[in-house]
Length: 152
Image (cartoon, rainbow, N blue to C red; front, side, top):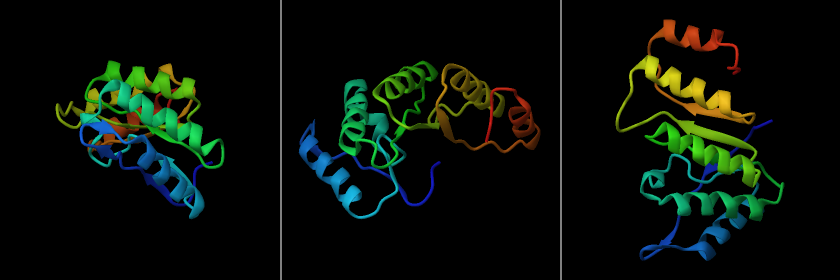
């Protein structure tokens, strides 16, 4: 069960490279100060600029450092559904506790398109999925809620 203060982690860089030491220090800060969960690759803004390897690395480091002490909700959303699926599968294999998926933010699919993305991701994952989306059409939200694989 997810509850309490869950923080989307920033991704520190040293010039052009991921600064793993500072990233680990940041995670440990949250572990030592009562944070209830962390989100590597969340919605802090830099995830679209991370390479696939960097994105996977920050998930991997967070899982390793937290060692089951607090939940890891891996940010795996993307403008590409296939990339979101790849990142989600990686996060599951790395043993993150849940996935945070944001619907595409630059190419802005239709409401029906957002639902199709959510359906595709929920079909491939047995993990708890948290979605950040901007569904405005109440009928489409109802269709999604009625869909058999979706639970809220």
